Length: 381
Image (cartoon, rainbow, N blue to C red; front, side, top):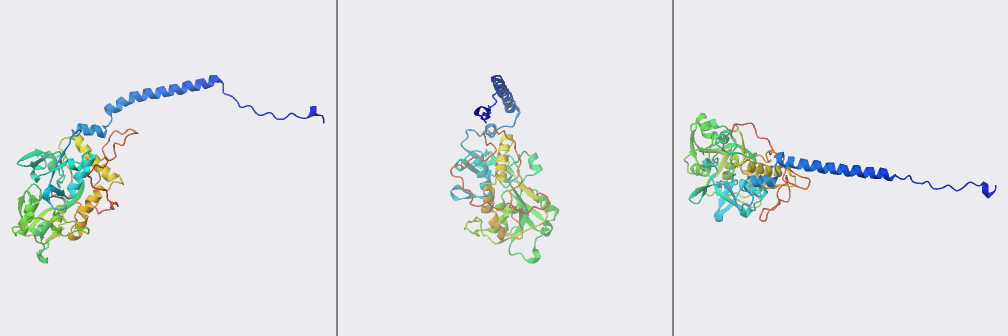
């Protein structure tokens, strides 16, 4: 076979080229799509801003908190484990820790929080004592049970932050024949309770002789002095008096600073409602939303164990001294979800960063599993 008759080497395939006209058409379509999206975004953003939910920053503005250097919070000052004022104006207790948690979400450092003592009858009006006068506080976090009557009186509650129930305490020296398993067991006996609670009427219905006082510590003092047979209010409040000066495993104490302190016994009366403690925010809707956002962040963020830490430090360790009565449910109540505007580059719904002076987060997260409260009527403490 001659060279001329040999087949020619295979020529490499030539890549098919896109005509310039087609490339320009694609570019024009891409530019058109980009312009269309930009126009739509420009049209939608004002609509979202006008009709969508507010941002957290806008809520702070509406609540009148932007630029504020101090947050006033009305709390109880005589309830060991809940809210107690110690010498040098040091405050401790579950309500105090919850107040600091909410204040931190609102952008206030612990040093910017000012606690003022508030009496039970002044909680709806948010009037707390300040020296010789009274001031209107921003928030009331004072073992305040959510009831329809209080809402009708003007209190505006956040979502609940604690579940507890009504119970009874007596001197531990009472005999077994005098055990208290219901309010009817107090028939004919003098019992002290808070003046503003609905317990007084229930005590009358049970045949007891109720005496009302504005401060639960006054009731407990009357019990020590032998002037009343029993005291009734929320179990979480009474637990601190039953625990007395006994320490937890770390040596923490909530001493009862009353006269003639005696051992007490905590009774489960088995008939009171689930008491739902809430924060009175007043008529400022934005402030209520912010408080609920703080509670929502606490309940839903797996990395946020502030509520559990407050429960462990103030309530859980008291349980062994208060059996058979349960102190409070060991799980944060279901929060109310508040809608806020959140752009992709924002994290509005997340809790605010910790502020200097805030308590360190605990090393471990407490177990959220808890018992469910039984269906009971409200004492409204």
